[in-house]
Image (tube, one colour):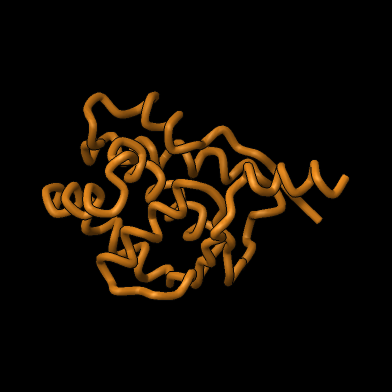
Length: 149
């Protein structure tokens, strides 16, 4: 019924706001503010409750891997509470956060935290309680579309 695309990818926000590998608390706040500034412009999301959110792509899969390791999750879903606690850990304990990211997805050390912040802001904005993580990405969807059509 409704869709939009917002220029708030984890790599672009990392490039715009982060001066080192890991964003400082001030940089994390800037990323959060940026994401929120885009979300409030999307009319169909205002005062919307979306209990279950579907995540597709590398950032959400990285977030899920980190949550699996941290909270011993086995399903392809995570609760918003897991995400919120993980974000709190990122803000409170940088050393443990870095170790967790390096053990889960070392290739995404620079984009994992912006991805966590983006997901958190979207989930919070629409009152999400559960996030389902797709095992497929955008490339698979594009390929499927090309094969079927």
